[in-house]
Image 1 (cartoon, helix red, strand yellow):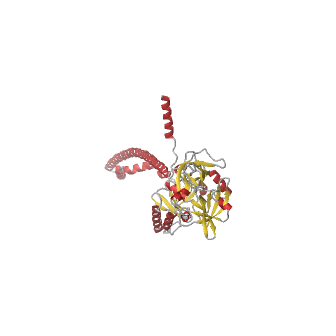
Image 2 (cartoon, rainbow, N blue to C red):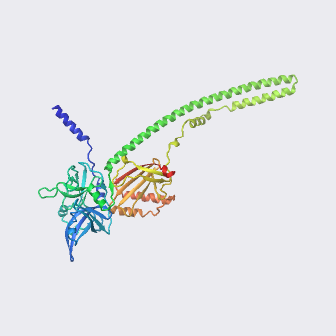
Image 3 (cartoon, rainbow, N blue to C red):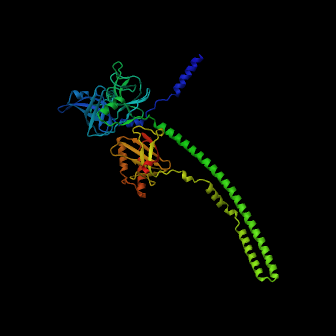
Length: 515
């Protein structure tokens, strides 16, 4: 019985201590949904339009949609069938043209005509067994339950998101697939299966059937198949292989790091203060000893000169009585000179009022200058990503060359605004649905990028605010700097609570650039 209880305890402890799968952040799944489209097939007979079917797809480039081959198979069989691309947001729909078709791994590529949409990022590593995933797409069962008509199906609307986990170790014979438990139905075909950070780990292809109903388990074409297919189609890939970390986890770790840094700095300050106090005490003792010694020396010299002056005066008196007038005058002059020296030696003896000045001099001589320890980041710097402090979801891991000017000018062309100890600039591009906050702390040499993947409405608000600031060059004009800071405060108000990506770089002087 005891061994059985011990075994149970071991199993429970192993279960409790094992790392749990990362949970999906709603902001990341919403960002991933921007790249999901409904792929609609319609046929035209004169003026009549017939609905043939639909599936899902995911943008892999601004004008390229990845979907299943079986979704667009009717187009191959009947040239009169047209492809419609219906985004998940906005008010426009687009036509599509089939440009690549691979039934062997059930993948196809569609070119969007006269439209650009946010592309997704593909997770280049292998998702582990039990990892959380989310299927995103347009299941027909949901459309039927909502009573949607054909006009509704060609109108942009948000896709359906269903969570599940990877049930690894099982794949189909025809191609490399991922088995998962995220509920899917007909219509989900071609839609992405994403990890908790919103990166594509597969494209949903088919499901296991139970009594003729919709799938209880899904099979997704793996990212390995996807990347090979897209490379063959000459599509530039957006890849990321960094582990997924939740924004909450990163915030907790950063808070712990800052607390540890504060404690470490407090200990450094305590030691420095103790050393400063000891140096002060030593300087006080040295100053007191020097002053006392100097005073005693001055007093002794004054006494000696006074004694000599007395003797000289006495000698002058004797000489005067003996009628040695010239010698008497010389002795009297010598006595006066010695008396004057005695007075000067007594008057110029060091006083305790000079104690503080002498203490400061001694400490300056014995204490090393602290400002020699500070590092200057003015000029060219090379900044390297600190993966431990970053949350990488869509970006490639590259170094950054940064030229810093103490007035907040970056790379001699972009003006940053003052925000406490840091300088920051918010970028709102016209061609992407992404807002980036780049900041630099010149005290720590820390460069930071916070990236927000926004929907169309949020981007329009951000672009409207950005238009208030016209100056784009570096400037020292106080009015323009205030205008920039006000614009950035307004932009922060329309951004979500947490960014989708956080990149923290540590900078150091770029010796190669400075040579």
